[in-house]
Length: 224
Image (cartoon, rainbow, N blue to C red; front, side, top):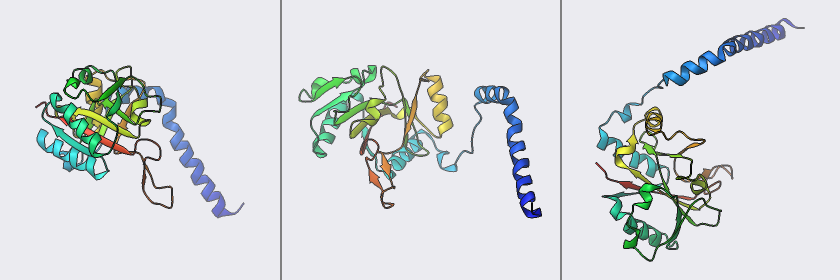
């Protein structure tokens, strides 16, 4: 075997040995990480007050092709949603999660809206979900799976509408996870959604809606 080849293989063996070392302590390492919730590098752009974080969230969300409607209160959601559906030439019908906050919306203000509840079977054009919160750093929504928030609503309808409150906008992903834990929202799946579904696999051209909704509309409710 040539000297250079033996040198390369020796380097690989050394690196594999170093990588395998900590694996012997995996249970302890994992337990420490679970308890400590170590923080990553905090980007300077999130060093803002609450209002600044909301503005950053909107800016980042719109940059990735989401649309945002700022709403004064949940009482204004029926009008805001009806207007959005009409502007997008969508039917005045949607399926929403059986969530207490969404159930508290005065939908009778817009009796023409057809509302069904529960998980989507893939035949719904529009889905309405309730987010746990949002991350200003990237304009990302946090949604936890469960009876009150079926994951199918996040991915099957071509148009996904999500309600989130101003007070639920955090700076970073770590802050978002803190909020999820504080709300007791840890579930089988926690989805971080940034903009509508997209792919660049087809001739390196961005195409929306390849693997999920091609529209993401955010109802940002002011509960300050």
